[in-house]
Amino acid sequence: DIKTAKMILLVGKSFWNSGMFAWKIETIVQAYQDHLPKVISLLERISNKWNETGIDADISAEWSQMPKLPIDIGIMEKAEKRIVIPVDYGWSDVGSWKALYDISEKDEDQNVLKCKNLILNSKENYVYSNKLVTLIGVENLIVLETEDALLISSKDKSEDVKKIVNKLKEERMNEYL
Image (cartoon, rainbow, N blue to C red; front, top):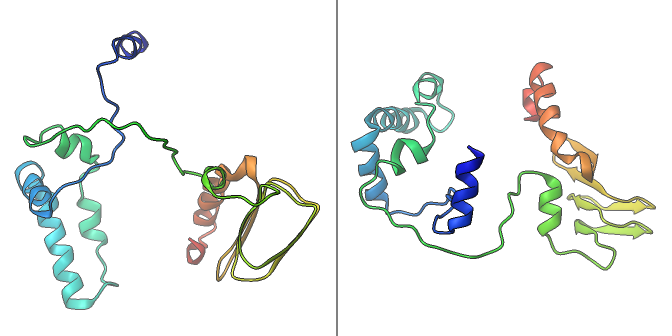
């Protein structure tokens, strides 16, 4: 609740779980064996399928049985050996193309250009392509080219890519996902 959150901030003796974990392989495997043995069993079945038929093996039956549980709750809250390391560093959730633009190195016109390019009177754009890209008089665009698709979006609408993904699923255009 908000009252508790404000108190935690005021006291200043708590840590924020950033969701970043590090461990030895043996340690995390043992933690799964101790706390989520079903996951280990399912992963072993997946591994066996991959060894028998390759990476394209159908693992949908195993995957559908995986517990829908974050590692924080399933493992970390129960772990006996854990430490918290306080750090103070800049962090950004790169969950959108705009966020990626924000943390990328920019040219003198504030463009991020991951391509061969010719740019005239254009600023604050993010462009990723394997082709030559020319921009003339545009601002605040995200332009992304892949082998089979092209995305052009205003930067302030870049989080709407999720809507496009949903639309692709609805239209059964899975080859573009």
